[in-house]
Length: 139
Image (cartoon, rainbow, N blue to C red; front, side, top):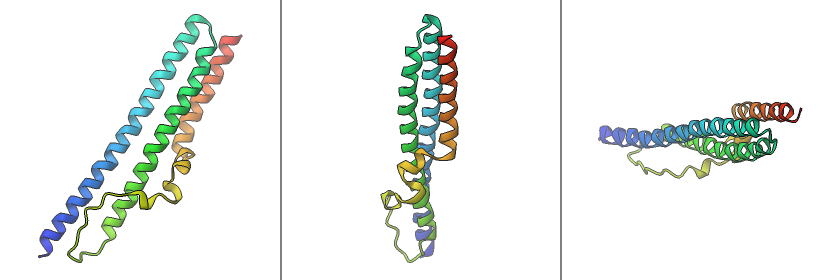
């Protein structure tokens, strides 16, 4: 009787892993799009010697940063759900509950994810590069 329960628990963990992988892939894709869009705006700014394209890159960076923080917070919540599933006793009941919002606390919140070390370094680097580009265009 323990084998079917173990299989169900493993399947539930697999579902949760798939969501975590999707959130991670989304975050990676957003970083790629951020690099692409900001680079294109830099190219336009340099071509026309127009600093306004650099200003638009700030808005683009903020939007990408917000989306990236959202996916990171979702990923963190599903990682907490995964840990909860692992810690559940094998009492013969598997709920297959995929609601991770109960773990929207502490480091898993959107605001904490926005200021996480990885996102802060990545996007603050782009803000600094944008400042340099604006300086070079204006001089």
